[in-house]
Image 1 (cartoon, one colour):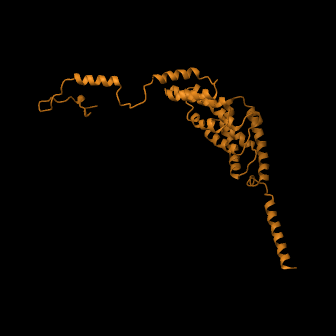
Image 2 (tube, rainbow, N blue to C red; image 1 turned 30 degrees about the vertical axis):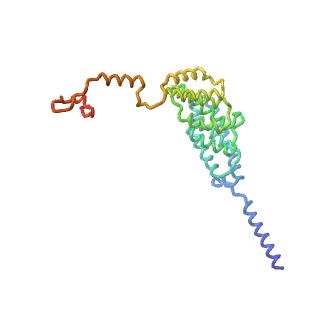
Image 3 (cartoon, one colour; image 1 turned 90 degrees about the vertical axis):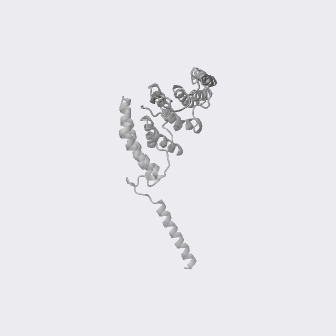
Length: 279
């Protein structure tokens, strides 16, 4: 056999061995559940079967409070461990377990963790179950503003969540106009309560510009009136013109000061301009 032919056969044999290693199946186990796409899909099927059982459990509970407790205390710790392993694996496929974990985080008002997972889910093109009839940005924006409006009506501040969401709902995400306008309306109400008339006017105007039926017309008119009555911005230490004129007249009418000397009366501590009297 020629040397060239022998070399060719060795190269072919080595290539076949490498290909065999690359295509070899990784045995399925708890430790290798996400070690390959095939194992990951097998594991996902097992997780989806467990999820179906837990969804039945949830639907059998009438109390909203009890459903929230089940999701927060039992189901989220159970499924978030899998979700983190899925994220660490670098794999990407439609994953309903991840999506339900996302939904439950917002259901239980864990907004920071929910938003972080939502951004990851959107980066993978994950979709909500068909019955939700909306995409992830719409679901998240709706969930937060629904909560914020309820908190406000209950006399509690929904900040900083409304302000933090604003760059997303009015800039980054494509949403129904009414959802975005609700965020500006809520910020306008908060500014109005704090008598920050300029901020209130800006928020209400933006809400109305986005969705003219948002219902802020009366409040906007009231805030504009209050803003018109407010003194112009300037040096807070400078007296107004009338005050300055009165001060000048007082100075003219005041008797001349007595010269300091040995015969000058001792000052009362309360009149001490240095503030050294007893407090």
